[in-house]
Image 1 (spheres, rainbow, N blue to C red):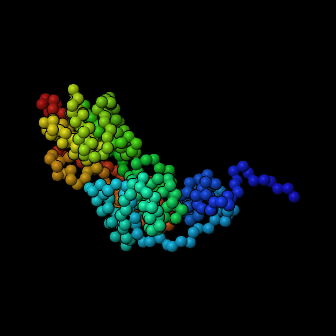
Image 2 (spheres, helix red, strand yellow):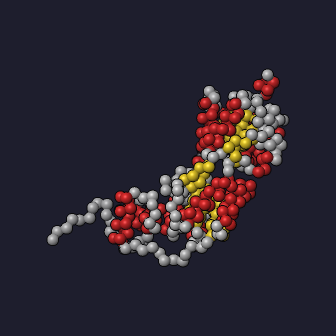
Image 3 (cartoon, rainbow, N blue to C red):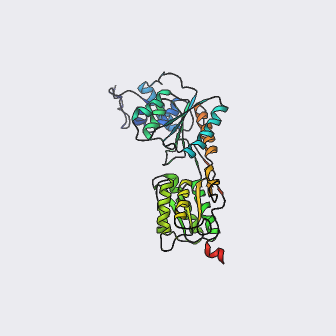
Length: 348
């Protein structure tokens, strides 16, 4: 008796390859996290996709690996340990871990470090992973294949819709910082931006542009400089801006470290802050309240973000459905002594 052949999108099992979650995902044309959700009975997957994945799981005889259970530890992975910034994050993660009776392990390795570093994290099978600030697609697939939930903290690049993350309102923060300066009467406002391929830096720059447009000001390309998020690079960028024939009366830096570099460049140029130059930063690291003058900055709630990210990661670690995949916590502008009206207006 004749039977219909397989449809064009059905594939036979390649006997040379093991039947893994990644193989199921490739065959179904979906992501590894989506297959993981189906296998673990979680929601967030359309009925059609769920049916397609379940059919492939049955056809290929896939079975969840019966490896050791996950340890009762949250693993916090840094790509770069910046002392002041990292301390605020660790404080929030440790607070939640202690409250839930869960251990905390802090790891550091870069995106281009040798493979064993990341493999060690996977083999430890932590209860969940909190990654600052990015996970590659391959790393996400490794975690999903091992059933290890993860959350990305303050992502630096666009993520697939089903990847959980906690960030902050970078665009609104950049807009608030710049609007504060336009409200003071500044018209030549420079921006020291971060790397152009970093998502939150782009958002802060877009907020700056939006506030200028709202104030009826054009964005002057010579007043926008892109550099790394360090004090040294902020200082070098500020030197070039302050050497312009018509120098800016205010500088908005993409982070506090850059802003501290602006302070140094202003001192070298014989300028007083805020009498001759207003400065605004972004992050609100504890140290900037103690510089002279104290820095006006956008408060990025790092500890609160870390608390929310850890709670989300532990929710996923318990096998529960998260109320939402992505969460942004609001920034606020903290006005201190580094901003004032521009010299001409103050004199008038």
